[in-house]
Every structure is written in C-alpha cells, then in structure tokens.
Length: 353
Ligand code: P6P
Image (cartoon, rainbow, N blue to C red; front, side, top):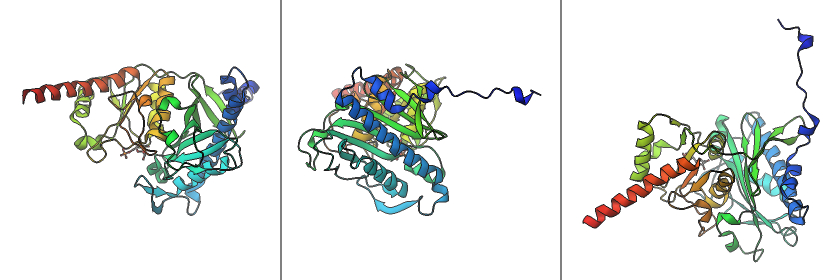
C-alpha cells in the first residue's frame, strides 16, 4: 500500500486560479475600450447570478417553498416553477443599479423589463431563459440558464422592443450556465467559445477550456422521440435512417442546455422540430436557440431551422419560436438533406396530380 505521506497533493496552480471570467473576457478584446470594460462587467454580473442560482439549486431540496409549481402560467402557456421565478428575479437584481443593462427580456416576462436608472448609460439588453429545463429541477437533474447580449437601440421604453426583432447575427455575446455535478459557464463574444468551472472554495469561475471546437460529426442524436407521431415525414425519414445505421446513439435529458453541452464537447445533433401542436417548434428564438446557435457557429458547428441558417432568421415577436437543428456540421446537414429530399418528393408528387 502506498506510503500515504508520500501521496502527492495536487497543487492548484496560482496562475490557473487567476484566470477568472472577467479577466478572460477583457483579454478577448485587443484594447480596453469602454465596450470591452462593459461586457466584462456584464459577464461578471451574469457570473454572480449563476452563483446565486447554483447555491439555491444545491439547497432547494432542504428549503421549504423552493421547489414545485407556483400555480401560475407564463406567457408561453407553461406552468411556472418556483425556481423559474427565483432565477428570473436573480437576473433582475444583479443588474439593478449596475449602470450596465438598460433592458432585460426573459422567457418568464411577457414584456421587456426596463431598469431606468441604467438606461442613459447602459446601452445593452440582456435576453435570458433563467431556468432552462425546469421540469428537471424537482428531480435533481441538470438544468441551465441561457443568455444573449444585444445592443440597446431605439426608444428605451418601447414595450414592443422592435429593435430586438433582428437576426441573431446582431448578438454581441451569448452563453449558458449548466448546473450539473459542477456549475459550468460557457460563453462567446464572437472570438471563440470558452468554458469556466465554478470553484466554490474561491467563489470564482475558473477557465477550463478555451476555443472549444465541435467535432464535425458525432454519434449523438438528441430529440424527444415521444413526438414521433406529430413530426413531419422528413424527420421520421431521418429517425428511420439513424435507427437503421450503426454508429448512432440517442441521448435526451429534457433540458436543452445539458443536451447541447454534450454535443458541443462530443459532437452530434440536437433537434426540436415543429410538431402538429407547435408547427414552429417549442424553443424560443431570442433567448434559447439564437444564443446557442451563436456558440455552435463560433465552435465550428451549425444551427438551422431545418430549412435556413438560424442566425439569419428574423423574429416577428419577442417570444418567437422556431424549429431547431443544432450541432456538428455534418449531422445538421444530414437532417437538412432529409428535409430537402422530402420537399423534392412532395413537389414531384404534386406536379403529377
Ligand atoms: P419536451 C425545457 O422545457 C425545454 O424548453 C428545453 O430545455 C428542452 O430541450 C425542451 O423544452 C424539452 O421539451 O417537449 O421534450 O419536454
């Protein structure tokens, strides 16, 4: 048996512990412009929100009133979890009196939330899904938060937020927090995709991986096959293909952030196609699909609605939904090929009538 006093206690290198999120964001910008400083400060506030949500999630099982439903229904028509509201309020609180973000738009709020004291100076809008996958919360499975940063344009107090109805290429930054065995924050400001792990002993997100690249193909296909009965035939064609060919494996957690994170690191494809009940799909463009699409493309992957590049899609309203196909380039292209083939087949059949 090894002599324990010779056991090597791994040294946490000082340099590594100093590679914090706010420092890394600043380094993404070659200069220390006002915008670079602003974005670094905004990311730091997002990190604080992540720590507060992570702490609540880790204790929720012991806290009266932390879990379960509120009894309310949100603008999406979904039953609201108490954790959804808590996390939504956390993001509001961390940006109040920050002078950074003028407007917040969230899955949980029908209209944008303005922070007037910030608006004259803070020229940014943060769009976010405070808890993605909240059906997992009460059973202690992974959930996430998704965020997207855009420039605050136009009239500050315009409830319609028309300036947000622009394509995803207008995003300045995007990312997510994955609350899993560890709390991981992944972000991009258009200069690669980088991940950080929360070190609870420091209370800091420490750099884990820089310039993450999605493999151009992977074995994972991730979608809810319980919706097979209400998919378009083209998606069924795709599913029949992966069911009949070696080298594919199904993974689906019910939480987009966890399913996407797996694909970001290991390759593959996530799909949430349109269904009979929701022809435009279930996922919301501005604060779910578009931020992940920004990350996917920055990591060398792809994201589409199935028929067009997702970041080119122009929403018609704040809570716009679209179908989503996202992940490794080759796997996204394979799904798209079945959609194109079925469209060709249907057009030929129609021409014969
Ligand atoms: P379904 C969670 O509600 C969510 O918005 C995503 O996180 C997830 O991928 C999807 O919905 C799950 O939806 O219909 O498969 O339960």
